Amino acid sequence: MQEELKYVVFETKAGFFGLLADENGLKRTVLPQNSHLKAKKYILVGTRDRAKESNVLYSELQKAIKAYYNTDNGDLINFAKLFSGLIFFEGTEFAQKILKTCMKIPPGQTITYAQLAKKAGFPKAAREVGSVLAKNKLPLIIPCHRVVRADGKIGNFSAPGGTKLKKRMLEHEKGIGFGV
Image (cartoon, rainbow, N blue to C red; front, side):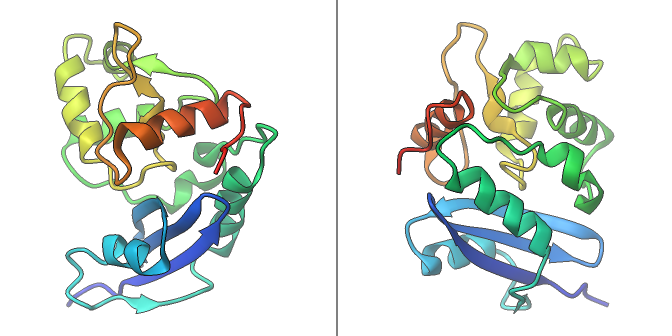
């Protein structure tokens, strides 16, 4: 039996954000896109049109995401604290441990891939951490944008919008404002 998938696309100051979930929890997020259609396209990848639209899907999470993007004063939301119960972690035990540890990075702070590897209990796995984060299906909720290279450079960002978006998110979290 296939799980029932639901999705919602909603507007924030930064663009259209998407959520996809099943009965186990949140499956995917799509960071803000410049159109409803584009966000919908990204959120529905691989679902073979099985997902049903639901505007009430995780309404409290939607409010928190809107608050995150709609503010210019650095009012940050700790998604891990508020919504970790909505997440169904998939993947290997290693990947789950990395993602759960990444969720603990506080808003407005960054750490390196090596520091994240060490905190998760895998001190020699910085490169593997990068591979896990590149497959993160829940950007913003699992804040992989807060993980940077050891040389202080931003590093890659596999979400639509790439490193430019990662930089904007980090600037926003440092209180500069999202600057749309």
